[in-house]
Amino acid sequence: MIRLTLKRGREASVARRHPWLFSGAVASAEGDGSDGHAEVVGADGRPLARGAYSPDSQILARLWTFDGRVPDGALLRERFAAARKLRLECLPPETTGYRAVNSEGDLCPGVLLDVYGETAVLELLTRGTEVWRPEIEAAVREVFAPSRLIVRETGSARDSGKSEIRNPKSELPLAPFLENGLHFLADVSGGQKTGFFLDQRDNRARLRALARGKTVLNLFSYSGAFSVAALAGGASRCVDVDSSSGALELAREHRRANGFSTEDPDFVQADVFDDVRGRAAAGERWDIVVCDPPAFAKKKADVDRAARGYKDVNRVAMALVAPAGWLLTCSCSGLVDADLFQKIVFSASVDARAAFVLVARQGAGPDHPVSLDCPEGEYLKGLWLRRA
Ligand code: SAH
Image (cartoon, rainbow, N blue to C red; front, side, top):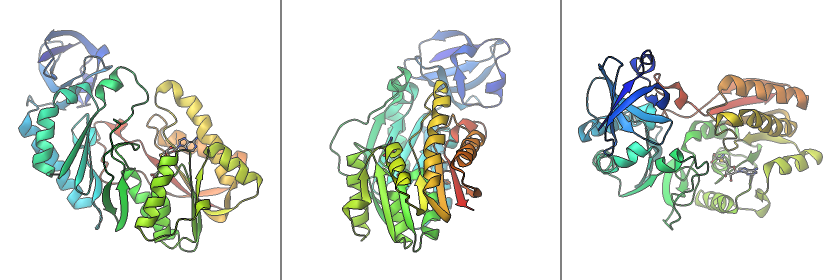
């Protein structure tokens, strides 16, 4: 265990139970943190918190307890059981794919667990939780009892500043699961995130509810889950656009698995920025456009460039929306907050000379809770806009 003594006057954040301890707040360290355990004490030596130690990260420790309790197997089991209970209370029926543990949002900083039917994917996001892996894995098995558990350690790679974290290349079978009664497959070895974008469940449900008879253009489609939801809601046609051939292959599988046809022109492998320009030039109009790009801003220095990217793609996407049609536009960059995102979208609509009204805001579902102590955990913004 390592004891981290705070600089004088730097206790406020820990006193407010914020789970991130930045290295700049620490005056001195004592002991060996090789077991991943850190104790945080004030400048006067008073114990304040305990957590997982990541020596190479700017966030030197992620704090798990503020009452002197040591984060051990019993605490992990308690936290995971509480997380499980929340899901049982909130998830819709016929849904076996969900985020079971959401890091800070479930008071388990550095731990993500996504469940896809019988398969669970555990992601250890920090060096400290990587060191705690045996205890975390055991607690996951005990509380969630998955038939198959896949563990991904991404903490050390993050700490060493690798911006692109690739999933380990292994040939695991796809993990089947249900979402609101629809059949999906998570690509747990080669896919994005842990294999599926569970965070968009509520937006997919909303799309399904208003898709009857409508045409849908699904930009940055990944495995086409929005289109499957729209087709289930009676959409007349859905087109998926993504740069990844593997994602589009899975999108076809998803349509087949739900009994929908797979016509070649409905799967377009292209750069969305080019694709939408071509469509706008050709005068295309769609009843519903979904625009859900990857995070354009991964660090603070990216925010300006990201803002330009969001504005650019939204401006062209808006031109493609038919009168009285819809645009669902999303941003999953935590660094672009809700306020800034709405301003960017507004300025895109001015440039597009297209008036929209904001009908609803919809972020991630209840299986992605955000701790009030750590508002940084909120990242997904979805704006439902209707063309005036
Ligand atoms: N909407 C999806 C998730 C999107 S993830 C869902 O709900 O499942 C972002 C996707 O954008 C990835 O599949 C990635 O391959 C794709 N992508 C990233 N940049 C792109 C670009 N410039 N043009 C087309 N696709 C892009």
